Image (cartoon, rainbow, N blue to C red):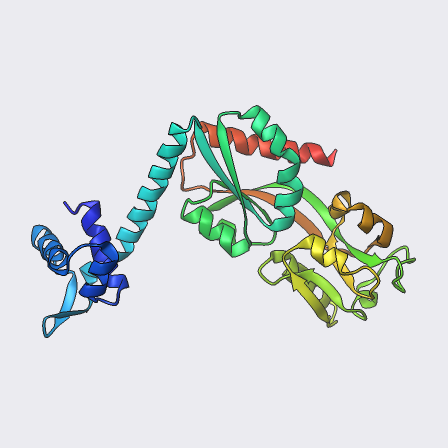
Length: 304
């Protein structure tokens, strides 16, 4: 059986471009000791891991490539187990990792954080910002337990379940000095005449807005695309920029935003749906299921 230490040695050789000397220095062991460990591993398992040329390692065999990929996964899993073990030793019954895009993290999750700690006092909650692809990868590699994301996305195709938790419409946010600020409604034809400030192309909302514009045979000038909603909104003050964001965002306006900005409904607007996500291939413990249900219920209570 290959022990964990030998897998660490093997991966170090591969990631140092098959240079035994550099790998040994990185591992703080002698070069002969590292060479002997690799030879012993190949002999014990009866599998050649490296291709050699004139006595030097130059590439991986098929078996070596398999061990390299699986070994990296094993090390990540081992690190996660050790972290969890230490947290349990620090009197936390469980650590739950939750990820979401910046706006969802700062609005929904920040609003219910107190209730989560009150309801689950023995749980350590770790929150992280992410985008659509980042959340998908984190759920699939199990570094995140639960996530919030906006539609559309391809999560169903890769084994990630989605439960709708909130729904809204996109509206236009403008400076109160904007030429369109007094309008009762805006049409898409009005909007495209002005520079837009929208979420970046790593977020599904970017494509929702672009599709709404292009489907009408229109073209938009995206002047600012970013990931921080409050920065995008603040930059509208005193300009002719327009931002398109869900109507719900008005609940998180600062006093300065309320004084200087206005929100105008958009005719034939775009739906904005938030979903709670998890990896369906993982048999989550009851505590995760309970936390997921609690988050969904709390967010839906916010709508009322």
